[in-house]
Amino acid sequence: MTEFRLATRVVSGSGSADRVGELCAELGGRVLLVTDPGIVAAGHVERVEAALAKAALEVQRFDEVRGNPTTLDVDRCLAVAKAFQPDLLLGLGGGSAIDVAKGVNFVLTGGGAMRDYRGVATASQPLLPLIAVPTTAGTGTEVQSFALIGDEETHEKMACGDPKAAPKVAVLDPTLTVTLPPFVTACTGMDAIGHAVETAVTTKRNRLSELFSREAFRLASANLARVLGDPDDLEARGNMLVAATFAGIAIENSMLGAAHSMANPLTARFGVVHGQAVGFALPHVVRFNAQDAEIRELYAELARSAGLEPTAEALAARLSELLHEAGLAAVEVPAEAAPELAAGAAEQWTARFNPRPVGAGDFQTLFEQACG
Image 1 (tube, helix red, strand yellow):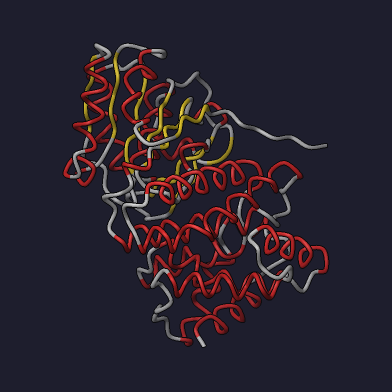
Image 2 (cartoon, one colour):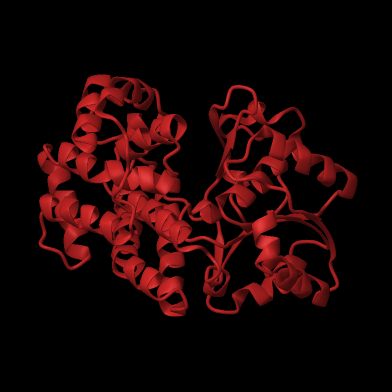
């Protein structure tokens, strides 16, 4: 039996951010805008607030979201939300801002603390409608029901999810991504590629999610170099946003695998940016999983969708090439750290969805290969 969920209305195209006012007006009159200082500095908040003002909406801004947000970010935003009592939430920014908006939604409507919502289907009360406006093309959180929030005390990443938490609307406007620094564009692009490749083969995949995985990979692999070569290429920017959203839809229905399990300890131990860490691990995970004949064929189909020779090895080689094209191949991790990193990877939630069983010993071999 196949179950496939697509809960979010997607509005895309250059200038679509200027429709945010009318889209919010369909859902309520009091808007809590959740964003970060970088988005304010880029001028995107002013543009969106003008659209909200044109629709005669009451707006309260929280613009202090930090990168890799924790429960402290949620608590600070929650205090603003409680005082304002919004009808709906608007997350504007990268995955951090949108995830904080989701986190506030859980606690504002259901009480308690963020850690109470760790896990799946944890919201006992109806949630406020949320509109997500991503300014990066990577996480896909704009179409997902999970928020990733760090615990301020333990630094552990908490996956907090409920079907009701999925945004009602995602607005994909490539003009909002033009101001991204090249390194951020590269890292978020590699994250989207990692999502596409991993979702294509997980144990939870289905025939519908595979369609989104393949199209996400086709778009991202063809457009990442274009965006990095010409940051003002709005067609390529738009394709990257759609790729990230398609990969996000695939995640929502099929989860992730071993490359993301490897990425988290790389980030925690050595500060490797998430998308770069995923890209660093991905070719080695593909070769590991391709030892299974069924998975090898799925990888071959993924390669074919992107115009490559239809083999798993061609896919792995292309992933290494993409990492170099993005300028992300230089990851300095000592081989002697492999046992420690492997122990951390084996504890990650996503490892359980990898198509081949993978334990600490397997992860150690993978890290040794990647670091060699």
